[in-house]
Length: 448
Image: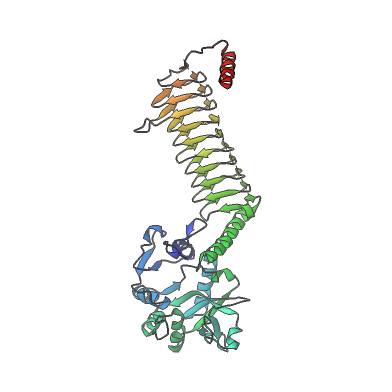
């Protein structure tokens, strides 16, 4: 990956790669989930809650990873083994593997898939009765014969084991190979030799074998994950006008009858209500949007928009901005850490920070809450049904009472009582003949 970040922590649709198989296993019913980790990287902070980690002291292969978890294997009835870099394995496919394993009363069941071009994947060699005899590697010339290379069924790197035969095979595993590593597929002939039944479970989805080894693989897997996410939302009743120009993270939730327009990115834990339209060209990050709202051509992060509210175009809602029911945050408006009451309007060209705006209030163009005094942030409180004139600056801490007004161009530094008009601006002075004076000065300057 050429990265300081461990491979399995690179994100796919907003979720660390390693979290995908963990969540799939949990959905498929796994009781205990352990991640085998390097001693050099602590993955705990990014793993789903309840996941255990087991340190593999030396990077000595996939079999070495299972040997590091030998105590867990012995304490289990059945063991499911997944790879941390194959994130497209679904719970449904895992359930199919476990069902096949149980139905066949197998000691080991290996997931396989068929590829038109198997490349360097290990080939599955079966016995005459269909059981798995062994896996033939195909990474280097001479590893497999010409006939074996013709086999299209390959190992997907996902296994179900009965714990006792697996534990015994791990004890007998050797690292007598050029790399000096323990290979997990080498337990299969050991289990078979010990009288255990080893079968292959063939699945039709080639994506179960789609792993990540570099940035190109990451992009390819992300593209497929994105396609599946979009498809699931559309089949659940969401209109996505242009799937090729829409990006939705794995943990985003969208209610039926919502419409997502082109150029929209929905990130993190964003949720969108029924009947809401988002986009075009809109980004939502960890934000909650209610029912029948509209968010157009805007950027929102860690904020809330209530039912039937309107946001945009060209609006920036920063963390802890809350737009009330039926309220409006209009064009070229920035709001941060503020509560905009139901039905209130911040129509255009305004900055509202650290403020509480009451129901039904209308803030005129270029209204600004000056919330920072150079040392600390201060809060502005604006009551219900307030009308501010254009170009009003409210210098916090300050409070504007219900039904109050401000005059255009005012700088408000003191509280305004309910129902009052607050005006704070210099008297206008007109200088007669000013234009002629400027023209004369200009011509004299040119002559000199």
